[in-house]
Length: 244
Ligand code: ADP
Ligand code: ASP
Ligand code: MG
Image (tube, rainbow, N blue to C red; front, side, top):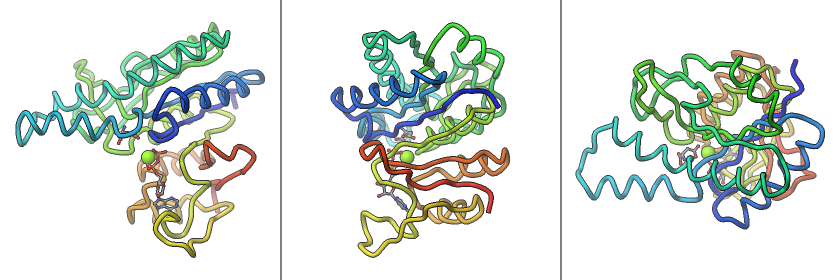
């Protein structure tokens, strides 16, 4: 196992510069002890806004160009977070999905990851404290930009963690873990301290947005424990997804 921590922050966790500063402070703390790969989503409702723009152009925008458009959301976040981290004195650098070597099939708007260049990532980490990676995107063998389906940044984080055999993979979000029901809709929802890959996959497949089903499948395949936790309650351990 390598001493690398993978941290993923979703859209609400990075929705403005104030939140990005908070994320940068979490990354800074982690980077004191370990190499860090941080995967980020687009800021707030950016992806929805970009989609809306495309839909104003035509009813069915071509998927190839939609992917070029939607991937820009995450590109904004990696640049801003890297600027903040460098300002804190860390050796940090931003990487798009293509730059970090996330190879996908050509199923535009819902692509599957085929391969990740762990050699490239480990070489980059030799010189840097933090790699800041755009979630939700990759590149085909032919060089076309792809996206991984809505919520796909979770999949990026888990796939990278598996590729580099990371010591930990934490999905930071706006709830404090995985519940039996959406806690924002059901007052009596009960939180799991831990949950098996299979049970979590069932929740995800049934539409629990908190983690993407493909991310759970990738974690199960690689037997990689994944922690889902709150960006805003840092001493709360959240929910650990692991073998039963
Ligand atoms: P992020 O932007 O961090 O990826 P998402 O909006 O994709 O966050 O997922 C977090 C949301 O998932 C929560 O705000 C919550 O309303 C919703 N959710 C749905 N089902 C569940 C569940 N079973 N447990 C926890 N959260 C859930
Ligand atoms: N930005 C993308 C979305 O809104 C991917 C993600 O957030 O995981 O679906
Ligand atoms: Mg999500």
